[in-house]
Each structure stands twice: as C-alpha cells, then as structure tokens.
Length: 223
Length: 406
Image 1 (tube, helix red, strand yellow):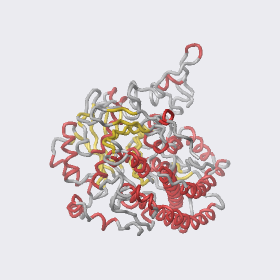
Image 2 (cartoon, helix red, strand yellow):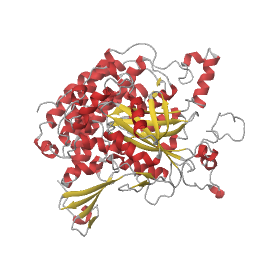
Image 3 (tube, helix red, strand yellow):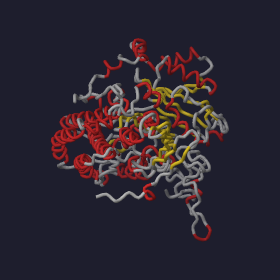
C-alpha cells in the first residue's frame, strides 16, 4: 500500500474543484482582501449594510435582516465563502434595556474562504420575538449551529428543516444562554425553606463581581 | 466461550415499524461504539440505512454559560473538559483570542513549548482514535499498542504539569511553567520510540483484509459536501483538499516549521485512516524540530498585568506583590472587543469566539467545536450503507462528545 499523496497547499488549490479556479486570479494582487469584500457588498447591496466593525484585523459586517439571504448567497457564489464555519448568538440585555442597542440579540455568522484563507463575520441584529431566515439553503452545515442558537437563545429560524432543541432536552423551559436566565437554572432548596445565598447574585449576571470598586460593601459576593 | 444467546436479554434497543415497511432502530446513547453518549435514530430498510438522525446533548453541562461567570484564567480548566483527548489544544484555542483582544505577544520559547504540548496532544488523540476505531471494528490488538504509546505521552504531561489528561498548562500570557529537568530527554527518547511503534501499528492495520473490507468505499463524502456541511480536519483532507489551519492561517509560530499536509483522494473511512496515520508522522517531525530548535529566554509575556511576576520577586518588590494579588483575585481586564482565532485541533477547526465587555470575565465565550460540525456529515455518510457501517463511520469521524455537548 503506497502512502497517501502529499501535495503542497498551492498546487492543490488550483486543482479539480471548479469553484476554485476562477477566484485565485482575482484575489491575487489585491492587497487588502477584507476591504475588497466590503466594497463589493456595498456596491452590490447599497442598503444591506448597517455598519461595520474592525478589530485587530478582523472585519464584521452588520447586515440588515431582510438582506441576509441574498448577501450570504452573494458571498458564497461570488466571493467564495464556501465554508460555513459557525453561527452563534449574543445577548446584549443590559445595553438593550438602557437603550444603547435597538435590538436585544445579535447573531454572528462566521464565514471562511478556503480560497483566500480569509474570514468574514456577519452580524445580524434581531429583537426578542423576531425570527431570522435560515441559511441552511445556502450552507447545509448551518443546520446544527442554528438549532443551537434557537435552543440557547430562543431565536427562531424561518425555513429551517429541523428546528428543535439540540443541546437541552425537548421539554426544557427557557433559553439558558440568555442573560436573564440564572446560572444553575433551578432553585436549590436548603433547610428552613431558603434557597441558598448564591441564587440572588446569579440572577444578575456580572453583579457582585468582587474587587470591582465595591470592596467592603454589602454587594460583594465573595467570589 | 461465549454465553448462550438469550433473545429477551439481547434486545436492549427498541425497534419500531413504520407504515412504509421500514424499521426504526435506536442506537445509543449507551452504545459502546458511539464514543460517549451519542444517540442515533436509524431508519432501516432491511439492513440498509435510509435515514439517520443524531440526537445529542446528553453531556450538555452549560460550559459556555458558566464561563460568563468566571474570570478568564478560571475558564481554562473548563476547556480541558471539552475535548478531553487533546486538552492542550483546547487551552491554546481559548487563550489565543484572549491574547488577541489583549494585544500581547508570547516570547518564542513560550510558543515552542505550546507547540510541543499541542503536538503531543495531537499524537495522543490520534492514538486513542486509532485504538478505539479498530476496537469498534473488532480488532482488539491495536488498542493495547496505541494505549502503550499514549501512556508515555501522558507521563510527559504529568511530569510537566502534574496532571495526565487535563494539564491546563497553557495560560493567557504564556505557560504556567517551563519544562522540568529531564523532560527533554524523555521527549527525545519518546520521539525515537514512536516511529517504530507506528510502523508496528501500520503493519497490523494498513493491509489488513478485514479492515480494508470494512473501510474502503464506506462513508464517502466529497470536498464540496464537506464545505457545505462545515466538516474540517482529517475528514476534509481525506477528500483531497490540503487545507490545514496550521499552514493556511498559522498561529503560535507554526509558520516556522517544515511539515506537510497529508491528503488522500477518496474521502472514505480508509482514507481518513491513512490521513491520520500520516499526520502522526508529521506531528513527530514538528516535535523533533521544536525540541531541536527550542529557543532560550522567557516563556511568558512581560506584561505584568497578565502574567504573574516570578515568585522570587515577590519577596523584594512591593509592585510585584501587588501585581500578584491583583492577577489572582481580580484577574485582568481585556479591552472591549471580539475575537475568533481558529486552530487545527486533532478533530478539525477549533476556535473560541470571545466577546469582552471590558470586565475581567468574558461577556460571551462560544466554542466552535469541530466534532459538533463534523457530526453533521454522519447522516450523509451513512445513507444507503449497512447498519454495520455506521460503527465504522462514527469511528472514522473521531468525535468527542464532551466537545459536542459542552
């Protein structure tokens, strides 16, 4: 039995897959590929982009909910974001309550191009009770991560082939990764009908953080 | 001698008939070949799988939720428990985005030591995969060979950190300590012993007619399907694409090492075996280069807000004492920002998405677990195959349920 073929990365990438042949010529010579994607999306969908965010070399595009599917299709077909890396949710409860954010949740789509080796992160803002279109029609692999977001944040996805809870049991109440969901999730009864000292702190995430300027006051939880 | 077959005791799974004449069989979650607590509901027509669905979550412990309540350095031991077969890779994957948000650099010696630990972990993880995969297929011999070699690697982890499986030795800012005396010699001895041991294993498996019969042409996927399904790691390399994050997006100094990306062409169970075996040899090459070229100097970043000062300084310097206290009680506060840094874990692309709100705890920690995404390919791989192939396919995907359920 001969050992498996060992080929270098460069030679392999211009080979048999049709979708890979074209893009290499286009992205070579473009100095800042991230910028290129930003301008391409802006040209093609002038209304789709709400905002952008750059941090330490990574680029986030804030996409309007209504344009999500067409932007994803465009990124996949023309900018070769073939690889569906991940979908995850964020809950900005405190900022939303204070009015800093218009919508409570953000869903992050983590896309990777195996042609340019670039990563692009899309963000869609979604409010409580709103749903998002499922991208499973574009990347089949969004199935599990979207179910995870639905399970842990309660954000439903339209046209998802199998939208049900994935990590928690089917009869679970609540969505555990929401910021107003207490850690532990269940009240642990102690003697004399009390529920233990920790449960009060736990209902307010990031409250009672020790050494946070409140040392010596009653608010310190002793964590 | 086997016990006589008693039907009433043997039917541990429930069988159900559908209207189309197919049969629904429940596999797991206690099935030994599901590598943990994976449950698969298979719809069978005779012995052929028409449809299958994975049911996961039996190990869900809410680690991502828990992390929001823990300071950054206290999250690290939790990450070991995700992919418990290659804990060092998980530590590194957690630490890298935090360091990216902090904007700190690790000295070369620290990076080399991290690579040493990660590659040792990769070898250990692949050895467990090989042993258990072949055990599932009925070949028990190889299991003892692989676990014998894995013990030596765990001994090295124990020597360094005191813990065999969950070292938590990589921390934000570097490592918890340098390698102890005698570690290098033990590692060099191991690197001499490993290639002949691998030869021995390959002699047993590679041309074994039973294994080839069970593995060749089973569980085939193409590169396009892998992309769409989010499959990464050895499974996608077995389809012919030489994509390895250590080469394509190098982290922790992997660009300085000379190694190749093994690929195969058919994308079946057998090719995934070939790719992983070749990867073991490449890892040994990386280990050899790392230990030969190990630079001197510091292992931790000099940023005293992140790395505790050396123990000796505390006795003489008040500032060091303050830093020591601050780090171990308050932790450190990265600036507001978000980061995702992928690494090539033995299972595929592993990355932590960290959102920092400026406090000493992550606002959000999300794990992009390779096993979780790779598992999506199982239904596609198993469709149209026999129920006996399911075991071979699960084994070849190399999943760890701790990472899937988190």
